[in-house]
Length: 177
Image 1 (tube, rainbow, N blue to C red):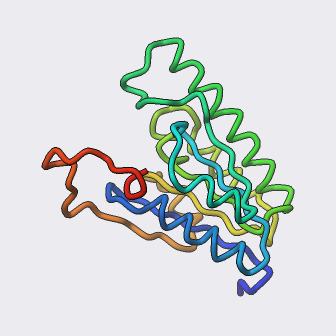
Image 2 (cartoon, rainbow, N blue to C red; image 1 turned 60 degrees about the horizontal axis):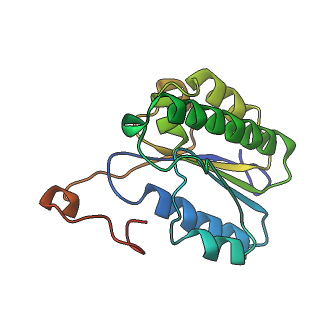
């Protein structure tokens, strides 16, 4: 039976707003409880309002910094940089999961990197199942595969029932980013 020294796997999935926000909330909670936290962000490189407060709290943040736009809007060179950056970040996250230095490792938008073909589901599943026993892990994004779902202890789906974007309201600083 899992206990206090056994880390579990959380999936925050779906097409709704709040997956990253939920993972950040868990980062703050874990840090407040004295755990070391690594927050990794795939497919995101623009400045967002949560980054500085996380760093001030002592949460380590690593991102795919060259990524400044959606994959669909990238040219071939930009896409290559994005893939390379995501693979490097994944290697860092996989090492962190395995080594056990951090009590919590978040892989934000990693499921979207898998869905885009940048990483394979098998690679992600291996990294998650090979993690040190005490490491809590969080993956966010859309449409996780069956093997990732099978490995998860928590699956929270965030569904978009309504979003202002559909009415033409642009993303707002401090709310959407």
